[in-house]
Each structure stands twice: as structure tokens, then as C-alpha cells.
Length: 100
Image (cartoon, helix red, strand yellow):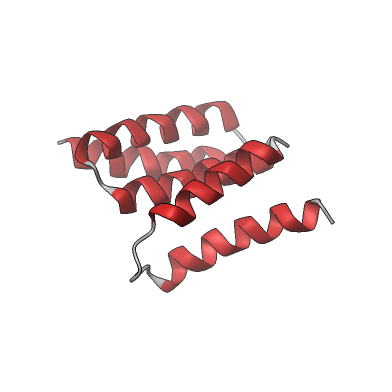
């Protein structure tokens, strides 16, 4: 299903990021975004934009990282899970720290 494609690709984006294969991580995140857009799933989009922000941060694309984190922030619902909010805030904090 489309939802399963989104979930699997989102999780794989983190797997590849952890092993520093950022190109594949980005491809998996973009595939997840495609699935979430087809489903109009804002939570899935937000989670995946957070992943993209982290990937961009690791590859020193700080402006792209910031833009992805902001997209995620705007898409998360009010009842965002604590872990998801902490993950996003941590990413934004890393960007702000880099610009200090």
C-alpha cells in the first residue's frame, strides 16, 4: 500500500543516515514524501521533512536543513507526540547553534 511505502521509506532514510549513506537516505526520504503527498498525510510529511532536515544537516546543507525543519514544524498537528517534537526541536537547535 502507499502508506506502507511511506513508512518503510521513512524508516530506511534513518537507517541509511545512521550508516552515513546520505545519498540513499535522501532518496528514501524523497520516496516517502511522495507517498505521504499522495495520501495528504501531514504527520508523515512532517516526520519525513524532519528526517530530510537531519540528512541535510549531516551533509552541511544548513539552509536546506533549516527549511526542511520549518516545513516539518508547520505540518505537525497540535497533538504531536513528545518524541517527534523533541526530534524536531533538536534539529532546529543544531541549526541555530551552527549559526551562533
